[in-house]
Length: 114
Length: 113
Image (tube, rainbow over the protein chains, first blue to last red):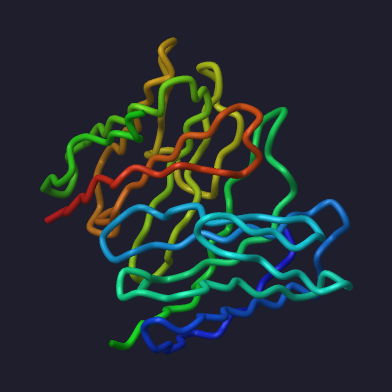
């Protein structure tokens, strides 16, 4: 799996956009970028994933650079409930057969300030 | 629809004992995977089951085992518990064709004394 690098922690004001960066310079052509988050004492929650095009869903947007070596997760209007550890994971698609486990790394601890 | 259900949520055991944790996946999900989370090592993959067969296994000793039943429910077992086995054990399910989109349960927090 390609390794990812994320800042250890970030702050963001409530109501503002939270932009979480992730570097994955060794990503392969068939590897997707996945984002999960984990709110304290809960299981991780899937947010979004993409291959090379930008993606948007009801939770967030994912911007992947053209060379695919980095990406940014955007929470458009952060709320206090978005305070969590955010994990950027690079992995081949897991459908169609046995899937290897995901490597979660340390993630970014995002703190939303009131 | 109901999420991933893990039982028990909390348990306390002593060294040398064994423990069995249970996971009921989302209805229709046939893949169940297990993760261990500790403050020092973070989230680590234990194993994944699909159609009652273990498909992949992480780097854990043989004391950690699991199984999956025909209804996709899964159990994991840890024998001869050690203090270092104290952790949050998370179960996740996914649809067979659901990429790496996992739905996690709330976890079972094991304390070994």
